[in-house]
Length: 348
Image (tube, rainbow, N blue to C red; front, side, top):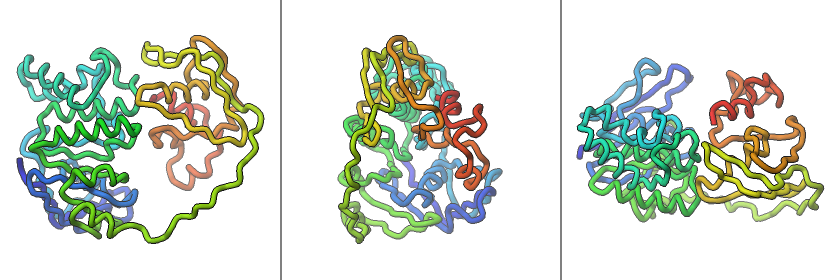
């Protein structure tokens, strides 16, 4: 194991007016477990990339010291969007990709891939296509890809953000077990589940300025927001007519039936929550409602496309413009070929 160190680090992407990270000093002794927190945009992901040695001087200006890894795979980085880390056509090849590129013997490649898939709780057939899996399953598969290279440090960017609570707890347990004897840095918004398992909590402000750094529970308690949230609730809306419905739906994804004889009615004025474990069919249900997945049986009732507002699991899949202003002003039916729903259909 080696120490992780950033000294006087400033990172200024050419695409931004101001640095993302400004004069950051961060020392993490070998074997320490660190929880990295801060508001969205505070630089957590950039700090993880810096620790992994992945800041590219062709895309930004880098000053200060950020020693990189001594060997490929020494620092395993799990990105917030797991699709960015998936490169192979099957689950088995995905887990084996790193060891294969390290030119390890065939027997060791197989042993590492199998052990990594087990450690990350990947419950998918080895021949299944990763892009056919759910977001949560993809996240665990990306973790397996990192573990297969036997990293001395794990750098994880919101590793449970796409998982239901039960699966998140299981994956968190597998991460902590895999981190034994390794350094661990986890960037998270949901802090409470990690506080008992880390040595240190570091909280970042804008441009990755450290505003708190210390024992996890004490540091978290000291940063608790003082305003009390409002407890008022909106007046109940009367349930209206059925606005969308699935009736007797069977649907497949990746050649596997994930919805069977499903009935669902969505009424006007009513908030409905669809929940379930990773891989239970939530995304397929939404795709069927939107008309992106054709059911093999049953019927779908839905409003006109311009009456549907849709936000996908990966928000960048809904972007159609080149600036924030243009994005906000883009009409719902803007450029059908690049509309949010069409984009999701192409990438999902």
